Every structure is written in structure tokens, then in C-alpha cells.
Image 1 (cartoon, rainbow, N blue to C red):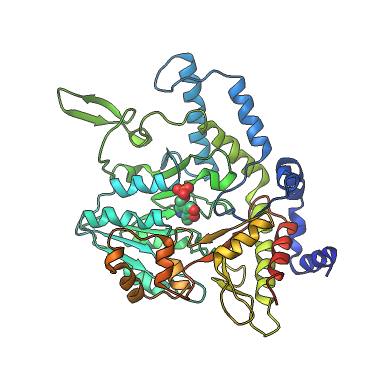
Image 2: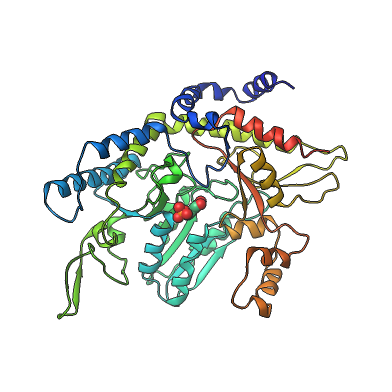
Length: 467
Ligand SMILES: Cc1ncc(COP(=O)(O)O)c(C=O)c1O
């Protein structure tokens, strides 16, 4: 079928796409490099793309000012401080967070935000750490701090086929909070594996039962509005490059001021104290975000965060979300329909098969006419030849992957307990433990600059795999 006919079919199925036309104009002006260089970018969950206007605005700012280290009160230092604090205030405004209630800590990325929580949360034996199976590894890693302090760790599994979290099991877990202890519950607003959106209503529910809630919003905020006046987690982690591509190297922990007070940092650093003494062997931590930003902040790049957020505000989450939903729906419809002459479906999608409570991330494996899986590495190599950027592996989300691929606990334990796997295990060796079984998947994700042509190029590439 011709491209035009396919487009007509698409619009008939997803008429709301037409309301997002301004994104086509934006792509032509602000993301023109995609088409000029012939790239089909389908890894928005890995990293967002920046608009050319963001770079220009940042460059002008750097060219027309002199900025010094913000730890002084000289004019160039004050210029930096003004822009860093302006960006901090704008992050709160962007997420509709009351500055009386929330504070923003700039971190290197979402993982940096999560590590701050891990190392400073007052885990103890009579508290708990409860988390979802489909968390990113940087949330999983917090369990090591919980273990070190003797706090029980409780995982809630996602369930097939949609890879959603079972509410009854969550409620049972929340009921186990020890009111005398510190209890931390962590879940992703959107899964970076399956694209599932988990209900944000859980935040208030868990809090009412004695939990501090850490919402990992890294995969959610690139295409969805997070309104902290409506949903009020105690801690939120995110990476800015995932939202607007540039700059990399910056994320944030947005935290309730009251809850920051309960964190216990394991060290102090330049910039985090009011007074530290060598001979007196004493230090006094500063207040609020200052106590959590080690050393000199990235003062030349933090102002570009405001530029990036303003770009997203101008484009609007409404348009981004609508476009992402339409393109995701079309991808799902087409992948579901592709079958070999033998009747074997080409694709096995992990997670929801409709756009209901899901974002624009699709994890999938592909099969030949005899039902044998194509290695995800092979798919990536083929995609590379078409200049299609997608992601393969388990996307740092082993829990969702284990459930999706039906890897059982006993198989994992058997693999890890082999003597040669005592200290080290490469991903290839790990795959060998599950000989013949897939140990990863292909992930495609759409975002702010995606269009119908990108998706259609990918689907045509997939059709080449049909016998
Ligand atoms: C849901 C989620 N959380 C956390 C992270 C970690 O982000 P970063 O690698 O920027 O620290 C990612 C990255 O893919 C993610 O998707």
C-alpha cells in the first residue's frame, strides 16, 4: 500500500493526530537534522532529542555573559547564582510544585537522585523498603542500602500479560508498614520496559498507610505532565536529557522539604556545609538543597534546563502526549497484525496491547515463520543498516524483563550459583544460562519529534522479516 494510503488509514484510526500538526512544523525547523541526516530515531526512552533553538539560546547566553563559580559574591559569581536559582525555581513552577513544600536538588541524572535517597534514607530494622518489580536498576540498587541497615526489602511482582502491578498485593504490602519505623515505597510513574503507566493515586494511598513515597518519574515526564499539586510524592527522580535532550549530565531530586530533613547524609563535601573544622572534627550541614549538592554545581548547564523546560512548555504536553499515543496505537495495531505465511505472528509484544494507561515505549521480540525468535542483537544490526536507532537488551529493568520473558527464580538462582559466576557474569554468559530462550527484547519508543514517517519506516523494516 502507498505511503499516502497508509497515512489516510492512520488518520482514520487516530484522527487526534491532526491536532498535533504544529509538531510537524517544529520538526521541520527545530529538529531538521533528523531528516537531513536520514535518521529514524526510536529511542526516546533512552534519551530525548534537543531542539536546535535550545542550543542557540544557550549559546547566546554563554556568549553574552561572564559566569564565575557561584560560591562567591563577586559579580560573575552572582550572575551564575541568579541563573542557577532561576532554573531551580522554574523546575518547581514547571511541575506545579509549591515552593513552600518542595525543594529541587540538581544531580548528575536520575540515578544520582536515587543514590542520594539510597545513601541518606534512614533505613532501619523496623522499617521497610517496598518496591515494584519493574523498577529501573537505579531504584533496585537502593535495596543494597536497605540490606546494609537491616531493613526488610519487599518486591511486588508485575503480572502477565500486561505487566501491571496487582493492586491487592500492593495493598497487602502497604499494610505491613511499621508505624514506628521508616518505610519507603518506590515505583515508576511509567515503566521504561513495557510503557505501563502506574496509577499515581497510589502515592496518597501509601502515604496514608505510613509510607514515604519515591516516584521514579524518569520515563514518565518526557511525554506526560507531572502535576505535583495533584499527586504529591515525597521524592521524585528524573533526568533532564530524557525530557529535552540537552544538556546531558543533569537530573533532579524533587523532594518535600519536610522529608529532606529526615535524610542523613553519610558525608559532607565542599558546598554542603555551613562550617566544617579540621581541628575541631565537626561539621554543620547547610539547609535544604544546599546540603545535597556536592561541590560546585554545573552552573553553565543548569540554566539550559530552564531553556529546555520552556521549550516543552511552549510545545505543550497535550500535543506531545496525543502524538505519542496515536503513533503508539498505530505501532501496536500493525505489529499485532503482522503474520508469516505459516500463520506465526511476527511480533510478541510485552505489556499492554492498547494505548490505555500506557506510554510510547514498546518492548517486543520477533519470530521467524517457524516461531523461532530472532536474536535481539540481530534485529539491532539490521535496524542499524536502515539508520533506525532502537534499543535492545533488558533496559536496566530486570524485574519486568524476567516476568515478560518468563525467566523463573530457580533458573536465575541456578545461573548465579554456578561457581564460575561467583564474582563475574557478562550479559552474554547470562544469556547462555537460558539457552534457546530470549533473555532480552527490542525496545522502540516515540517522543516529542516523532512523526508518522518514522513509524512507517520502522514498520516497513519489520515487514522485511516476514517470509
Ligand atoms: C524509569 C527510569 N528510571 C531511572 C533511569 C535512570 O536514568 P539515568 O540513566 O539518566 O540516571 C532511567 C533511564 O533509562 C529510567 O528509564
